[in-house]
Image (cartoon, rainbow, N blue to C red; front, side):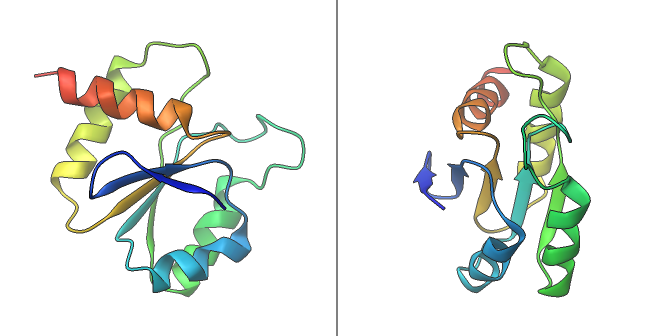
Length: 111
């Protein structure tokens, strides 16, 4: 798991495994956001598997699927709202982290 900070409180990474979740909870993340649609990649765990692992360690999750190459204004607004309502660091993941970083930048631009 390679985590890349975008800001002090918003970090991104590529695909997480359920076994990564306990480490994230121990690292004081408040929320994990999955931006991959289920079934996008071979061997990718479904969001429900990540969610179950997070519930087991008391970590909040949110599924905000973004289709690669799209311009998801609705999802950017949802991300902005999620971040407003979340205290503490957030980790968002997708296949590489690029989609998450792009959506974050889009969320900053909308009013």
